[in-house]
Length: 149
Image 1 (cartoon, rainbow, N blue to C red):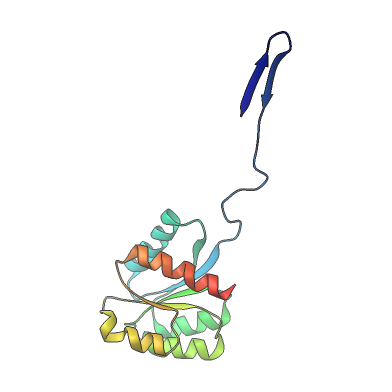
Image 2 (cartoon, rainbow, N blue to C red):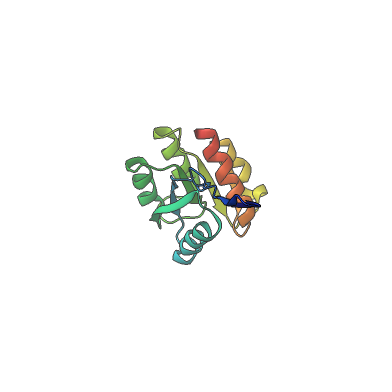
C-alpha cells in the first residue's frame, strides 16, 4: 500500500493486490504405506504442517493392499516402508513399477541406507530415506514429483 499527499491536491492511496496466490492450487496426492498407524499419522501431520504442496490421500498397512491401491488409484507419489506384512516393500516396489513406471516411489526405512538403500534404488525407487529424516524426506518428495511433471 502506498499513500501520498501534495499540498492543495489531497491524498492519494494505492493498494496493490496480487492476482494469484503463491500457494499451490493443486496438492500432490500421496499414498503412504507403513504397517504402523502411528507412522502413517505422523507422516500425514508432517505434510499438513510443513508443506503446501502434498496431501496424504490414501494409506495402506500391508504390501498386498499397497499394490492394489497403487495400481487402482491416481497418485502423484508413494511413500513406502521396506518392512511390511504380506509383501515386503521391495516386492511392492517391483510390482507397482511394472504397471505404473511413472509413479515415483520413495522408500522409507529404519534400516540404514547401506542395508537396503542401494537395492531399492537399483529396483527403481526415486529415493531412500531413513525414518526421522524429515527435511530430507520433503526435499526428496519435491525432487521426485518435479521430475515426473
